[in-house]
Image (cartoon, rainbow, N blue to C red; front, side):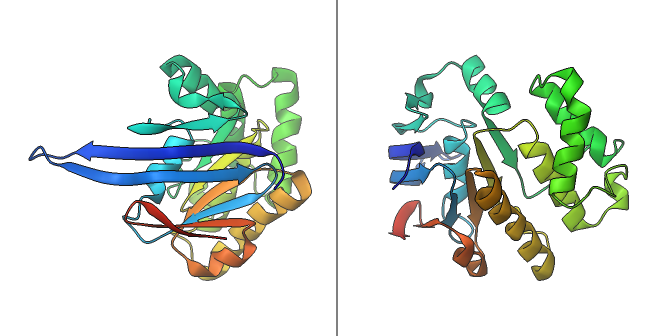
Length: 228
C-alpha cells in the first residue's frame, strides 16, 4: 500500500424515519483510499454507497466512527472548516452534471475556479488546459444545451479538477450515459489517475467498470461485504 490520503474507521450512519424507527444506512465501515489511485465503491441502489461518499466527502457526518483526511479527523471540524475543505481540497462530480445552462462550458469551469479562490491571472489558461485535457478544447465555448450528455459530464469533470484538488469524488457519474459514452468518461478518470496522479473515489452499480479500478469495495445493506 502507498500513502493513505483518506480513511474511514468504524463509520456508522443512522437515520430516523417518520414513525420514529431507525434505519441503519451504514454499519461499521472501514476503508482506506490510497493516494494517486482510483477507488470504486460498488453496490446496488440502496446499498449505502452514496451515503458513504457523502460522509467521506464531508457533506454529512457519521453517527459513529471517524473519517481521516491527510492525517486529520474531519468529522470533528466545524461546518466552516468543512466547507473550506470541500471548496479547496476536494471536488465532486455528480450523476446530474449541475452545469449552469446560461453559461458556456468555459464559463462553468471558470466559475468553479472563482469559488475555489484560484488566482485571477491564471484562470483563463487553467480553464483552457483542463478543457483540452478532457477533450473539449474545441467545444469549450458551447453552452450545455448545445452539448451531448458525455460532453456535459466531461465539462463537469473539468470543473471538478480545475482547481487541482487532492481528492475527487464521483457519485454514479455514468448512470445517465449510454454504454459507449460511459466507457469514455471512466477512461478519462483512469487517464487522470495514471497521467496526472489524481486520487478519485467513484461509486457505481455497473460491474463493467470494476476492471479499471485500483481498489474496489462492495457494499450491501450498508456493510462492506467484499474488497479487492
